[in-house]
Length: 409
Image (cartoon, rainbow, N blue to C red; front, top):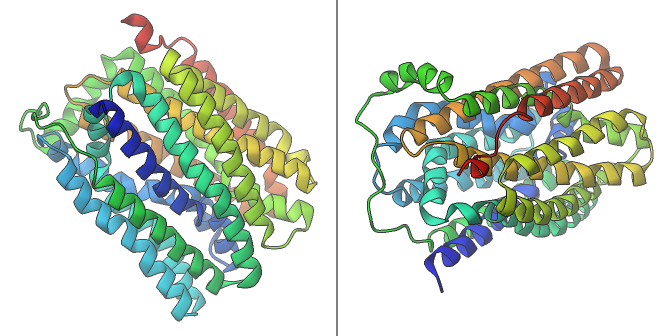
């Protein structure tokens, strides 16, 4: 088999198990309700969907200059990936054997946070690894099919979540779900170890230190108009994250549904992700990342506009179907556009800067959402939906003038 195609399949299957494992502890749908049920602070409820990304922030920016000096990335990825999954094993054991609510709350928040830290150490290296092992014309379908395979497992995961919480409500059920998540990550790690990196050395960045690279970033950003526009769009888009933690919470409230209803929402979200993955991969490989990114934002805009007026389970299933489609179509489009738009020289540092801006924007959105919910309770939902709709419209408008990189070749 062609090495490019073999690597493509390796990334797809290991990524599917990685995402399928994390679907057992879905950060957008499941964990915010868990934290609220444990009477966690409202800011933590709002932060749960991006807590892993917050973990990425520090290591990503502070290790980018080291990643840029590497000639091969696989050894570092294997080292970091080992610890990436162990955090969920530890969290599951805490919930099963230490029933103290405070420790359970710390474990729930700590697992994605610590997992994100180890992911952050290797994130820019992983993006570089993708660029070295898969050609540009196959990357959109790679990102999409990772999501599709993960979502197929996630649909089954939705049933597992629903049946587990129905049979074992409370902390025991959540502990079991974290053990299932660890199993998925362990399979992913084993499969990732089979992917081979090219023998030839990667382009090495100049041996600059951290502060030299950070000082150079403003000049790099201001001289690249396309990159600056993409970053501005990401910055505004992050404010829509104020709504995401409260979608499932409001869905349960508006329907008067039991805790197991969250499992059904996860299943519908994963089904939407599969449909969106097929479309994003096909469109992205042919037209680049901008088009799927804009389409995904339009799906999320639809959810922001209609979610305050929905009160039946069937309508919520439809919205979570659209949510799964929109969220991951955005992911495919952004990941593709990100790699296409960045030059090889300085890519590790630029990836770190872009991810940092994305996370900081998400944190701001989450804090706004948490503050509104703490002040107004359920009444805040309509205002969060309005904020989400506004930020999505503005982010779409900002990106319209950006010329797709492949159209300039």
